Image (cartoon, rainbow, N blue to C red; front, side, top):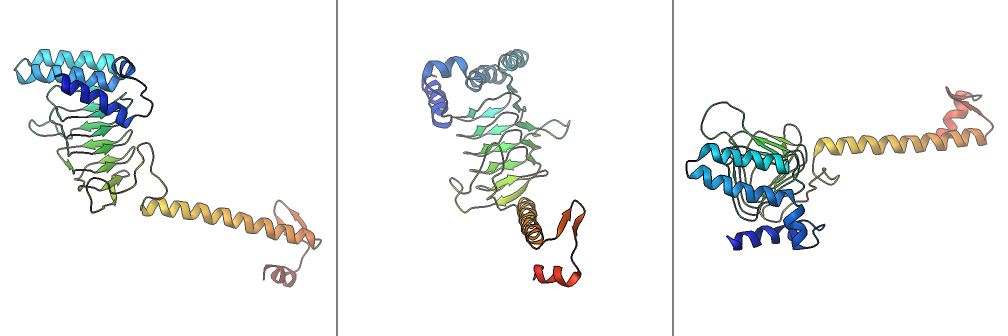
Length: 243
């Protein structure tokens, strides 16, 4: 019991540079509190005390803003950063060394009994606001970008972003591959839509610069430029300037 408690405290220092000391972690970190409460509720659930387990979970939700069903199975060194709005369903399974940011939902897509929530492999990182829905599997070392909506399996080591989520990186190594931002998708991710948008922005900026140079040259040659465009030059003179 105490070894697990030490692990839970140590993992906060490993993954949150804002943590200053053990007392602060034990008193001011809702993710740490939520895990302590979940373990107690999970023991009650497994012992057949379903209502009592749900009541413990409900109290934990009220205290921390994190809702973890007592039936969920969570591995060691699990860390929830900030935590507000996190929802973890009854049949969710989370492997060791996983990290969730605030607003994450591990939810179901059916009212049927049985397995209906996601399974996360070890070392998975889920960015803020992401939704992982249904009895799907997120492979070991995978990363889910912020605000993504994942409804299909994600391979080990891959990075998934977008609505619906699509794979943008699938490195060979499941542990350390790929660049990832927990709060937003970086510009260097291999996302064709994001790249196209950035290219359009770059083109717009470059076009503005060329227009400014053109207007400056027109004015230097004595032309008049108003809000509706250049006037005072014939077509040949303008073509000569552009060329």
